[in-house]
Length: 271
Image (cartoon, rainbow, N blue to C red; front, side, top):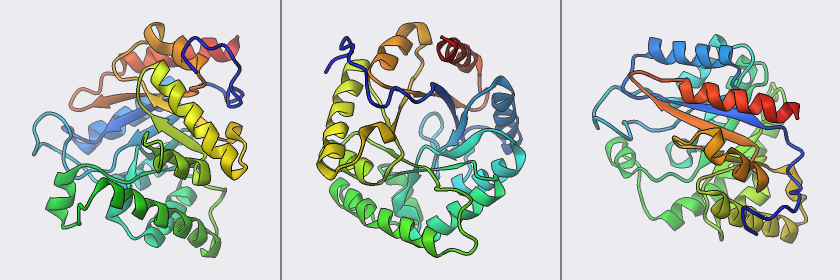
């Protein structure tokens, strides 16, 4: 399967959506809050942050804020957009606690939370905060053990979540990560050009078929980097991507590229 393959994808029924990852680095919280409010006004569908303890670019010890307390604040400060982490690191919290945190933010937001989750990779976070870094395979195994615990905890909480909280899993590992996506996720988030994404979609589809799940149930998501819709929009759309996420960093949080993607979304969904 390549980016030029015109075969309809079973997940092409999803509407095109636009996300914004507001990287919580190199800015005051007031600037972050204003950026999320501006993005909601522009018409973004999902506002994401990320789950790290230090900046990933720029000054390594620059300004930075924690993920989940911020999501709770966004739940109160926004009205329409879905919110979530792109992505939560499974290593940093007990899975049952994470499930309860997600349920609570789900209620605060009136059912707008997406639980984005991954196995973790940024070694400085682990070292500075006292978590065992281990191996990539071990972290993926831990994620595989955590996801059923999260799902089970949601069935025990009182009150229950307001909805079946959508689970987004990030990562492109074909043997473990995409298998976990097939088993547990509502959204898969990856990176790469259209040809790479098309290949990952095909692998994910096979994992779904193996376990008897309809691949069309899983929304396909990707980050767009600094690319414009004119550069990559159609090619990614043609291979089944439906959630396109722009990332912005402090201190300026330039939303020009986001406006372009929102306008493109409006045109595509109108067609």
